[in-house]
Length: 470
Image (tube, rainbow, N blue to C red; front, side, top):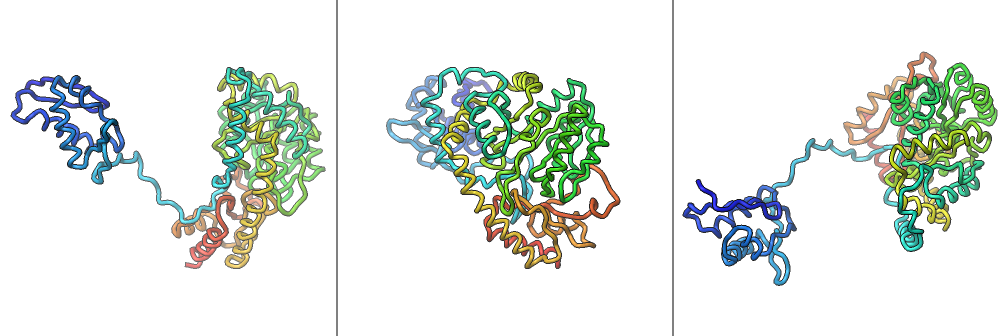
Protein backbone atom coordinates (compact mmCIF):
# COMPACT_ATOMS: atom_id res chain seq x y z
CA UNK A 1 0.00 0.00 0.00
CA UNK A 2 1.57 3.25 -1.09
CA UNK A 3 1.59 6.21 1.26
CA UNK A 4 1.19 9.75 0.00
CA UNK A 5 2.21 11.47 3.20
CA UNK A 6 3.27 10.54 6.74
CA UNK A 7 3.84 13.48 9.02
CA UNK A 8 4.37 13.82 12.79
CA UNK A 9 2.41 16.94 13.73
CA UNK A 10 2.17 18.05 17.40
CA UNK A 11 3.18 14.51 18.49
CA UNK A 12 0.41 12.93 16.37
CA UNK A 13 1.25 10.66 13.48
CA UNK A 14 -1.30 11.25 10.67
CA UNK A 15 -0.96 8.81 7.78
CA UNK A 16 -2.85 9.30 4.50
CA UNK A 17 -3.26 6.56 1.90
CA UNK A 18 -3.81 7.99 -1.61
CA UNK A 19 -4.82 4.59 -3.01
CA UNK A 20 -7.58 4.02 -0.47
CA UNK A 21 -11.23 4.50 -1.36
CA UNK A 22 -11.73 6.16 2.05
CA UNK A 23 -11.93 9.94 1.67
CA UNK A 24 -8.98 11.90 2.99
CA UNK A 25 -11.03 13.73 5.62
CA UNK A 26 -12.22 10.35 6.95
CA UNK A 27 -8.64 9.14 7.21
CA UNK A 28 -7.67 12.25 9.21
CA UNK A 29 -10.70 11.76 11.47
CA UNK A 30 -9.74 8.13 12.09
CA UNK A 31 -6.10 8.97 12.83
CA UNK A 32 -6.99 11.70 15.32
CA UNK A 33 -9.79 9.67 16.92
CA UNK A 34 -7.43 6.73 17.44
CA UNK A 35 -4.77 9.04 18.91
CA UNK A 36 -7.32 10.34 21.42
CA UNK A 37 -8.54 6.86 22.36
CA UNK A 38 -5.04 5.50 22.92
CA UNK A 39 -3.98 8.51 24.96
CA UNK A 40 -1.38 9.82 22.50
CA UNK A 41 -3.48 12.99 22.42
CA UNK A 42 -4.42 13.90 25.96
CA UNK A 43 -7.32 16.04 27.17
CA UNK A 44 -6.52 19.73 26.61
CA UNK A 45 -3.83 19.16 23.98
CA UNK A 46 -3.80 21.74 21.18
CA UNK A 47 -4.03 20.62 17.58
CA UNK A 48 -2.30 22.56 14.82
CA UNK A 49 -4.30 25.16 12.90
CA UNK A 50 -6.21 23.65 9.99
CA UNK A 51 -4.15 25.61 7.46
CA UNK A 52 -0.87 24.40 8.95
CA UNK A 53 -1.97 20.76 9.15
CA UNK A 54 -3.23 20.92 5.54
CA UNK A 55 0.14 22.25 4.41
CA UNK A 56 2.02 19.57 6.31
CA UNK A 57 -0.15 16.78 4.87
CA UNK A 58 -0.31 18.18 1.35
CA UNK A 59 -4.11 18.43 1.23
CA UNK A 60 -6.55 21.30 0.92
CA UNK A 61 -7.52 23.20 4.05
CA UNK A 62 -11.16 22.24 3.48
CA UNK A 63 -10.27 18.55 4.01
CA UNK A 64 -8.81 19.28 7.47
CA UNK A 65 -11.66 21.63 8.40
CA UNK A 66 -14.19 18.90 7.54
CA UNK A 67 -12.30 16.37 9.68
CA UNK A 68 -12.07 18.80 12.61
CA UNK A 69 -15.79 19.67 12.37
CA UNK A 70 -16.81 16.03 12.45
CA UNK A 71 -14.69 15.35 15.56
CA UNK A 72 -16.12 18.46 17.23
CA UNK A 73 -19.62 17.15 16.50
CA UNK A 74 -18.70 13.79 18.05
CA UNK A 75 -17.35 15.49 21.17
CA UNK A 76 -13.70 14.55 20.63
CA UNK A 77 -12.55 18.12 19.94
CA UNK A 78 -13.48 21.55 21.20
CA UNK A 79 -13.12 24.56 18.93
CA UNK A 80 -13.38 28.26 19.85
CA UNK A 81 -13.30 30.93 17.11
CA UNK A 82 -9.96 32.70 17.10
CA UNK A 83 -8.30 30.07 19.27
CA UNK A 84 -6.75 26.61 18.94
CA UNK A 85 -8.74 23.44 18.46
CA UNK A 86 -8.21 21.29 21.55
CA UNK A 87 -8.89 17.73 22.63
CA UNK A 88 -12.08 17.64 24.72
CA UNK A 89 -12.62 15.44 27.76
CA UNK A 90 -13.37 11.90 26.63
CA UNK A 91 -14.70 9.53 29.28
CA UNK A 92 -13.36 6.40 27.64
CA UNK A 93 -9.87 7.80 27.06
CA UNK A 94 -7.35 5.30 28.39
CA UNK A 95 -5.35 6.44 31.39
CA UNK A 96 -1.68 5.49 31.51
CA UNK A 97 -1.19 2.48 33.73
CA UNK A 98 1.15 2.99 36.69
CA UNK A 99 4.43 1.06 36.62
CA UNK A 100 3.41 -0.62 39.85
CA UNK A 101 0.05 -0.68 41.49
CA UNK A 102 0.08 1.47 44.62
CA UNK A 103 -0.28 -0.31 47.93
CA UNK A 104 -3.60 0.26 49.70
CA UNK A 105 -3.35 3.40 51.82
CA UNK A 106 -3.51 3.25 55.60
CA UNK A 107 -6.68 4.54 57.22
CA UNK A 108 -4.58 6.18 59.94
CA UNK A 109 -0.83 6.58 59.52
CA UNK A 110 1.17 7.14 62.71
CA UNK A 111 4.23 7.91 60.60
CA UNK A 112 7.05 9.90 62.15
CA UNK A 113 9.71 12.33 61.01
CA UNK A 114 7.50 14.80 59.20
CA UNK A 115 5.71 18.08 59.79
CA UNK A 116 2.10 18.99 59.20
CA UNK A 117 2.56 20.10 55.59
CA UNK A 118 -0.89 21.72 55.56
CA UNK A 119 0.36 24.21 58.18
CA UNK A 120 3.25 25.48 56.08
CA UNK A 121 3.15 29.32 56.32
CA UNK A 122 2.60 29.93 52.62
CA UNK A 123 1.63 33.59 52.85
CA UNK A 124 4.64 34.53 54.98
CA UNK A 125 6.98 32.49 52.78
CA UNK A 126 5.56 34.18 49.68
CA UNK A 127 6.22 37.60 51.22
CA UNK A 128 9.83 36.62 51.77
CA UNK A 129 10.14 35.31 48.23
CA UNK A 130 8.73 38.54 46.82
CA UNK A 131 11.11 40.69 48.83
CA UNK A 132 14.06 38.54 47.80
CA UNK A 133 13.17 38.61 44.11
CA UNK A 134 12.77 42.38 44.28
CA UNK A 135 15.71 43.32 46.46
CA UNK A 136 18.41 40.64 46.25
CA UNK A 137 21.68 41.68 44.58
CA UNK A 138 22.05 40.30 41.06
CA UNK A 139 25.27 38.45 41.89
CA UNK A 140 23.41 36.22 44.35
CA UNK A 141 21.98 34.42 41.31
CA UNK A 142 25.42 33.42 40.08
CA UNK A 143 27.43 30.41 41.25
CA UNK A 144 28.34 30.72 44.92
CA UNK A 145 31.03 29.23 47.10
CA UNK A 146 30.39 26.06 49.04
CA UNK A 147 29.35 27.87 52.21
CA UNK A 148 26.04 29.38 51.07
CA UNK A 149 24.74 32.91 50.70
CA UNK A 150 26.06 35.29 53.39
CA UNK A 151 22.58 36.58 54.30
CA UNK A 152 21.42 33.15 55.45
CA UNK A 153 24.67 32.30 57.20
CA UNK A 154 24.44 35.51 59.23
CA UNK A 155 20.74 35.07 59.99
CA UNK A 156 21.24 31.45 61.07
CA UNK A 157 24.19 32.26 63.32
CA UNK A 158 22.09 34.91 65.06
CA UNK A 159 19.08 32.60 65.40
CA UNK A 160 21.02 29.55 66.61
CA UNK A 161 22.99 31.56 69.16
CA UNK A 162 19.79 33.12 70.50
CA UNK A 163 17.44 30.12 70.40
CA UNK A 164 19.73 27.10 70.65
CA UNK A 165 22.67 28.42 72.65
CA UNK A 166 25.31 27.78 70.01
CA UNK A 167 28.56 29.70 69.75
CA UNK A 168 28.60 30.53 66.05
CA UNK A 169 29.65 33.23 63.66
CA UNK A 170 28.50 33.51 60.07
CA UNK A 171 31.89 32.15 59.04
CA UNK A 172 31.19 28.88 60.90
CA UNK A 173 27.87 28.20 59.12
CA UNK A 174 27.61 26.14 55.95
CA UNK A 175 24.31 25.58 54.11
CA UNK A 176 23.37 22.07 52.96
CA UNK A 177 20.48 20.33 51.23
CA UNK A 178 19.16 18.92 54.48
CA UNK A 179 20.66 16.74 57.20
CA UNK A 180 21.41 13.79 54.90
CA UNK A 181 23.80 15.88 52.82
CA UNK A 182 25.35 17.34 55.96
CA UNK A 183 26.15 13.81 57.16
CA UNK A 184 27.47 12.76 53.76
CA UNK A 185 29.81 15.76 53.54
CA UNK A 186 31.17 15.31 57.05
CA UNK A 187 31.60 11.55 56.70
CA UNK A 188 33.47 12.01 53.43
CA UNK A 189 35.82 14.61 54.90
CA UNK A 190 36.42 12.47 58.01
CA UNK A 191 37.23 9.41 55.88
CA UNK A 192 39.69 11.37 53.74
CA UNK A 193 41.39 12.54 56.93
CA UNK A 194 41.94 8.99 58.12
CA UNK A 195 38.79 8.18 60.11
CA UNK A 196 37.95 4.51 60.20
CA UNK A 197 35.01 4.11 62.58
CA UNK A 198 31.73 5.93 63.24
CA UNK A 199 29.72 5.45 66.42
CA UNK A 200 25.99 6.08 66.51
CA UNK A 201 23.23 5.65 69.04
CA UNK A 202 21.47 2.31 69.19
CA UNK A 203 18.59 2.50 68.34
CA UNK A 204 18.92 5.31 65.82
CA UNK A 205 17.77 6.31 62.35
CA UNK A 206 18.80 3.89 59.62
CA UNK A 207 18.58 6.24 56.63
CA UNK A 208 21.46 8.69 57.04
CA UNK A 209 24.70 8.07 58.93
CA UNK A 210 24.67 4.28 58.70
CA UNK A 211 24.47 3.89 54.89
CA UNK A 212 26.46 7.06 54.22
CA UNK A 213 29.30 6.07 56.53
CA UNK A 214 29.54 2.65 54.92
CA UNK A 215 29.53 4.30 51.51
CA UNK A 216 32.74 6.05 52.54
CA UNK A 217 34.29 2.84 53.87
CA UNK A 218 33.71 3.63 57.54
CA UNK A 219 32.79 0.97 60.05
CA UNK A 220 29.61 1.69 62.04
CA UNK A 221 29.29 0.68 65.70
CA UNK A 222 26.25 1.08 67.93
CA UNK A 223 26.22 2.66 71.38
CA UNK A 224 23.50 1.58 73.83
CA UNK A 225 20.88 4.17 74.73
CA UNK A 226 18.77 4.42 77.87
CA UNK A 227 16.37 6.99 79.31
CA UNK A 228 19.26 9.47 79.67
CA UNK A 229 20.62 9.10 76.17
CA UNK A 230 23.79 7.45 74.99
CA UNK A 231 26.01 5.24 77.20
CA UNK A 232 29.17 7.37 77.46
CA UNK A 233 31.24 4.47 78.82
CA UNK A 234 30.47 2.53 75.64
CA UNK A 235 31.54 5.54 73.58
CA UNK A 236 34.87 5.67 75.40
CA UNK A 237 35.43 2.01 74.53
CA UNK A 238 34.32 2.38 70.91
CA UNK A 239 37.58 3.51 69.32
CA UNK A 240 35.47 5.78 67.09
CA UNK A 241 36.72 8.79 65.13
CA UNK A 242 33.26 10.33 64.65
CA UNK A 243 30.18 10.00 66.82
CA UNK A 244 26.67 11.08 65.83
CA UNK A 245 24.38 12.04 68.72
CA UNK A 246 20.90 13.46 69.26
CA UNK A 247 21.61 14.86 72.75
CA UNK A 248 18.64 17.24 73.11
CA UNK A 249 16.00 14.62 72.20
CA UNK A 250 17.40 11.18 71.42
CA UNK A 251 15.88 9.62 68.34
CA UNK A 252 13.72 7.63 68.77
CA UNK A 253 13.56 7.06 72.55
CA UNK A 254 13.45 10.72 73.54
CA UNK A 255 16.10 10.88 76.28
CA UNK A 256 18.04 14.05 77.08
CA UNK A 257 21.79 13.68 77.57
CA UNK A 258 22.64 15.05 81.05
CA UNK A 259 25.23 17.77 81.57
CA UNK A 260 27.80 15.41 83.09
CA UNK A 261 27.48 13.05 80.13
CA UNK A 262 27.86 15.94 77.66
CA UNK A 263 31.03 17.02 79.41
CA UNK A 264 32.33 13.45 79.32
CA UNK A 265 31.67 13.24 75.56
CA UNK A 266 33.58 16.50 75.01
CA UNK A 267 36.53 15.27 77.11
CA UNK A 268 36.59 12.03 75.11
CA UNK A 269 36.49 13.86 71.77
CA UNK A 270 39.35 16.19 72.69
CA UNK A 271 41.51 13.38 74.03
CA UNK A 272 40.76 11.17 71.04
CA UNK A 273 40.95 13.91 68.40
CA UNK A 274 37.46 12.85 67.32
CA UNK A 275 34.47 14.75 65.94
CA UNK A 276 31.05 14.93 67.58
CA UNK A 277 28.16 15.50 65.15
CA UNK A 278 25.17 16.91 67.02
CA UNK A 279 21.90 16.23 65.20
CA UNK A 280 19.52 18.91 66.52
CA UNK A 281 16.60 17.55 64.54
CA UNK A 282 13.52 18.75 66.47
CA UNK A 283 14.70 20.68 69.52
CA UNK A 284 12.33 23.58 68.79
CA UNK A 285 9.30 21.50 69.81
CA UNK A 286 9.22 21.05 73.58
CA UNK A 287 6.15 20.84 75.80
CA UNK A 288 6.90 19.78 79.38
CA UNK A 289 10.45 20.84 79.95
CA UNK A 290 12.79 23.83 79.84
CA UNK A 291 14.83 24.44 76.69
CA UNK A 292 17.97 22.33 76.33
CA UNK A 293 20.96 24.18 74.88
CA UNK A 294 23.00 22.77 72.02
CA UNK A 295 26.20 20.86 72.77
CA UNK A 296 28.07 22.97 70.24
CA UNK A 297 27.90 25.94 72.60
CA UNK A 298 29.81 23.87 75.15
CA UNK A 299 32.63 22.86 72.82
CA UNK A 300 32.65 24.54 69.40
CA UNK A 301 36.15 23.15 68.76
CA UNK A 302 35.03 19.50 68.59
CA UNK A 303 31.22 19.57 68.13
CA UNK A 304 29.64 20.04 64.70
CA UNK A 305 26.05 21.27 65.01
CA UNK A 306 23.61 20.12 62.32
CA UNK A 307 20.05 21.26 61.76
CA UNK A 308 17.43 21.65 59.04
CA UNK A 309 13.94 22.95 58.36
CA UNK A 310 12.63 19.43 57.68
CA UNK A 311 10.93 19.11 61.09
CA UNK A 312 9.95 22.77 61.43
CA UNK A 313 8.90 24.13 58.03
CA UNK A 314 8.95 21.46 55.31
CA UNK A 315 11.31 18.70 54.25
CA UNK A 316 10.68 19.58 50.61
CA UNK A 317 12.56 22.88 50.99
CA UNK A 318 15.80 20.85 51.28
CA UNK A 319 17.49 23.39 53.54
CA UNK A 320 19.92 22.41 56.26
CA UNK A 321 23.07 23.70 57.89
CA UNK A 322 26.26 22.82 59.69
CA UNK A 323 28.05 24.90 62.32
CA UNK A 324 31.65 23.81 61.91
CA UNK A 325 34.90 24.18 63.84
CA UNK A 326 37.44 26.27 61.88
CA UNK A 327 39.60 23.27 60.97
CA UNK A 328 36.66 21.57 59.23
CA UNK A 329 34.97 24.52 57.54
CA UNK A 330 37.13 24.77 54.43
CA UNK A 331 37.33 21.05 53.56
CA UNK A 332 33.57 20.61 54.06
CA UNK A 333 32.89 23.69 51.89
CA UNK A 334 35.12 22.24 49.17
CA UNK A 335 33.21 18.95 49.36
CA UNK A 336 29.90 20.79 49.13
CA UNK A 337 31.08 22.72 46.07
CA UNK A 338 32.12 19.49 44.36
CA UNK A 339 28.83 17.82 45.28
CA UNK A 340 26.38 20.29 43.77
CA UNK A 341 27.93 23.74 43.22
CA UNK A 342 25.93 25.08 46.17
CA UNK A 343 22.33 25.00 47.38
CA UNK A 344 19.67 27.01 45.51
CA UNK A 345 20.14 30.72 46.18
CA UNK A 346 16.50 31.87 46.06
CA UNK A 347 15.43 29.45 48.80
CA UNK A 348 18.41 30.42 50.94
CA UNK A 349 17.65 34.12 50.58
CA UNK A 350 13.96 33.57 51.29
CA UNK A 351 14.74 31.65 54.48
CA UNK A 352 17.17 34.39 55.57
CA UNK A 353 14.41 36.96 55.09
CA UNK A 354 11.96 34.65 56.88
CA UNK A 355 14.31 34.50 59.87
CA UNK A 356 15.15 38.20 59.95
CA UNK A 357 11.50 39.25 59.87
CA UNK A 358 10.63 36.95 62.78
CA UNK A 359 8.40 34.67 60.70
CA UNK A 360 10.24 31.53 61.77
CA UNK A 361 9.71 32.33 65.46
CA UNK A 362 6.03 33.11 64.82
CA UNK A 363 5.56 29.83 62.96
CA UNK A 364 7.12 27.85 65.82
CA UNK A 365 4.99 29.64 68.41
CA UNK A 366 1.88 28.81 66.37
CA UNK A 367 2.76 25.14 65.87
CA UNK A 368 3.88 24.25 69.41
CA UNK A 369 0.35 24.29 70.92
CA UNK A 370 -1.04 22.44 67.90
CA UNK A 371 1.48 19.63 68.23
CA UNK A 372 1.09 19.59 72.00
CA UNK A 373 -2.68 19.08 71.71
CA UNK A 374 -2.07 16.19 69.32
CA UNK A 375 0.44 14.64 71.69
CA UNK A 376 -1.95 15.06 74.63
CA UNK A 377 -4.73 13.42 72.63
CA UNK A 378 -2.49 10.48 71.79
CA UNK A 379 -1.50 10.05 75.44
CA UNK A 380 -5.11 10.24 76.63
CA UNK A 381 -6.28 7.73 74.03
CA UNK A 382 -3.48 5.31 74.88
CA UNK A 383 -4.32 5.57 78.59
CA UNK A 384 -8.00 4.85 77.88
CA UNK A 385 -7.79 2.13 75.26
CA UNK A 386 -4.33 0.56 75.78
CA UNK A 387 -3.60 1.18 79.48
CA UNK A 388 -0.88 -1.45 79.70
CA UNK A 389 1.29 0.40 77.18
CA UNK A 390 4.02 2.68 78.56
CA UNK A 391 4.71 5.94 76.67
CA UNK A 392 8.26 7.34 76.67
CA UNK A 393 10.03 10.38 75.21
CA UNK A 394 6.88 12.48 75.46
CA UNK A 395 8.30 15.82 76.61
CA UNK A 396 9.30 17.07 73.17
CA UNK A 397 9.36 16.31 69.48
CA UNK A 398 6.82 15.03 66.97
CA UNK A 399 6.54 11.38 68.01
CA UNK A 400 6.64 9.20 71.06
CA UNK A 401 7.71 5.64 71.79
CA UNK A 402 5.32 3.29 73.54
CA UNK A 403 6.68 0.20 75.28
CA UNK A 404 4.54 -2.90 74.87
CA UNK A 405 3.44 -5.12 77.75
CA UNK A 406 5.30 -8.38 78.25
CA UNK A 407 4.07 -11.06 75.90
CA UNK A 408 3.33 -8.74 72.98
CA UNK A 409 5.63 -9.00 69.98
CA UNK A 410 6.09 -5.72 68.12
CA UNK A 411 6.25 -7.36 64.69
CA UNK A 412 2.93 -9.08 65.34
CA UNK A 413 1.41 -5.82 66.60
CA UNK A 414 2.60 -3.97 63.48
CA UNK A 415 1.11 -6.67 61.25
CA UNK A 416 -2.20 -6.75 63.13
CA UNK A 417 -2.46 -2.98 62.94
CA UNK A 418 -1.82 -3.02 59.21
CA UNK A 419 -4.64 -5.51 58.69
CA UNK A 420 -6.96 -2.95 60.29
CA UNK A 421 -5.64 -0.08 58.18
CA UNK A 422 -3.37 1.40 60.86
CA UNK A 423 0.30 2.09 60.09
CA UNK A 424 2.73 1.92 63.00
CA UNK A 425 6.46 1.20 63.15
CA UNK A 426 8.37 -1.08 65.49
CA UNK A 427 11.74 -0.34 67.08
CA UNK A 428 13.52 -3.46 65.84
CA UNK A 429 14.55 -2.06 62.41
CA UNK A 430 16.43 0.77 64.13
CA UNK A 431 18.55 -1.39 66.43
CA UNK A 432 22.07 -2.26 65.40
CA UNK A 433 22.82 -5.01 67.91
CA UNK A 434 20.88 -7.79 69.58
CA UNK A 435 21.23 -7.65 73.36
CA UNK A 436 20.18 -10.02 76.09
CA UNK A 437 19.47 -7.39 78.73
CA UNK A 438 15.78 -6.76 79.34
CA UNK A 439 16.17 -3.00 78.94
CA UNK A 440 17.61 -3.21 75.44
CA UNK A 441 15.32 -5.94 74.17
CA UNK A 442 11.99 -4.33 75.09
CA UNK A 443 9.34 -4.41 72.42
CA UNK A 444 8.02 -1.03 71.37
CA UNK A 445 6.39 1.11 68.71
CA UNK A 446 7.11 4.57 67.32
CA UNK A 447 3.95 6.67 67.02
CA UNK A 448 4.12 9.95 65.14
CA UNK A 449 1.35 12.49 65.64
CA UNK A 450 2.51 15.66 63.88
CA UNK A 451 0.19 15.54 60.86
CA UNK A 452 -2.81 13.80 62.43
CA UNK A 453 -5.75 15.88 63.67
CA UNK A 454 -7.05 14.87 67.10
CA UNK A 455 -10.09 12.90 65.78
CA UNK A 456 -7.83 10.83 63.53
CA UNK A 457 -5.50 10.09 66.44
CA UNK A 458 -8.44 8.89 68.52
CA UNK A 459 -9.71 6.78 65.62
CA UNK A 460 -6.28 5.25 65.14
CA UNK A 461 -5.78 4.27 68.76
CA UNK A 462 -9.25 2.74 68.98
CA UNK A 463 -8.59 0.74 65.82
CA UNK A 464 -5.23 -0.36 67.19
CA UNK A 465 -6.86 -1.60 70.37
CA UNK A 466 -9.49 -3.42 68.32
CA UNK A 467 -6.80 -5.02 66.16
CA UNK A 468 -5.14 -6.49 69.24
CA UNK A 469 -8.41 -7.60 70.79
CA UNK A 470 -9.55 -9.46 67.68
